[in-house]
Length: 415
Image (cartoon, rainbow, N blue to C red):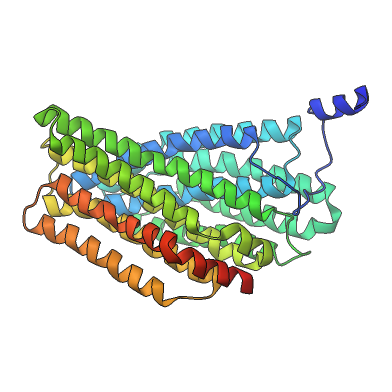
């Protein structure tokens, strides 16, 4: 029977030493604080997807690409840094909780700045000031966390200080961008430089003192949950398409097909994502985490863009889009293609093996995507084109469940 003292120890949130979590801890799962933190990013994704939808439907492709690319990096990178830090150093004391609260506030400010960012790009400039303010707030909170870890975990002091230094340098750069109004081309170059500084920080830091004690199973679960939040935009886009179809023609076969296409595509992408053997491989090969995690940025962006593409289809059905049916279909087909290509690339990177089965699955997937595009070219209704596209991820799902799982099991035994 537990003593009163031990029960109190578990229940309170007094300050605890940030000495690092056990990377081999059994049954490590996402905390309720982490899940609450994730909800703020659902807001960011909603804002980003809405702005991307408007830009694509208006044919403003440069605005769509630059705005969504910038937003995706800031959103994903802020989430990644918090989540990887929490995996290694989550103390769940009141200091950690308050620091997380500050970061959540920064996320919401970043979301508020997204419309202004897209609007400025459309007019030939780059006004990311509000976004940067929100982003810097999040990152300053992370600097505090890393400095705390550096003080309380002497064995990894150099690692933590390197993280803090890299973040500090990058934030000085971001602040300089909003203080000095550079031309668009100069601003884009500077943004690229600071993106590289942000990306280089973890790569340099993890080389020192053996790296941070992040938990492989915990981190793959966290990324999976983040992907599910992004997939929510696919369901939002499905509802928008279904609503537009019903308002246009009522409850018809096309309305039913729109629902099937959107839900089927979203569900298929979730299933394909879950096929990646991330936890098992990263537990044995921690050095592969960098490329894997950086690839997740593009994966998440492609998932959110797919949801925006479905929303573009809804705009087209409502006769509010200024682009043709082929462009509407491509707004969904391109991110789906990127997503599936990245899944295969990350799978190869993780297991270091590319089976002949993968070649056939990729070929079949390419045929399905090409068929949906061809149908759009020849004037087939956008809903039917989306139904065809829905089968792209299903090809991989069927291939894996029929025989691919055996190949993967054999490969994992060799790791």
